[in-house]
Image: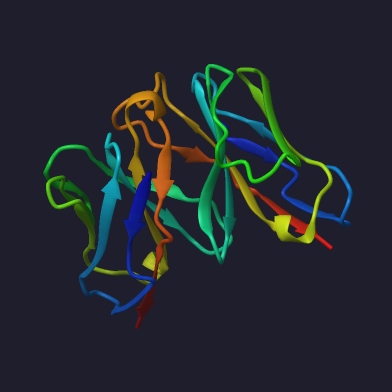
Length: 117
Length: 112
């Protein structure tokens, strides 16, 4: 089991540029979550998918943020245009079978550290 | 919505026992999780409680009281490598089942 794979590990970009973060969940997990972590706001849920369908995107801060999950093995989080306040660590996590399967914890990727200058 | 509170920082001595508390107020409850996060790394799962009582897992134990909206993580025989942030997370239910809300984390420093 390779775990949740995220790319890139680090991204430095200039304000106004488009940023795309990628995630490959654990095979067999049908839930995928995008979180953002900052010192000020902690770990915030941006959006999550069940069976590739977005269930709750109420945490997406603005229309500049969008997420897709075209198939069970791939998801992207896009920021366009990026701003300095988007600087954070973005984590992707996947979860076990079913929605809210008891005892099925989240498995996190190593995160993407985004810096927008 | 969910509101989760934990202390910001704690310090303990190597070999000692430490208890990290978590209180929550939620609109729905489908389990409470504890995660460990070392600096610069991803959170990793430690424990899960959905029923009242104590769950023991080696040096780590977690307790839950649903009526009080309270949980704690107990770490025994502390080691230097236990220095990390400990995150309490509550899973929602119903249409939002699967959605976990995290507390801000408790940074634990273990001193020699």
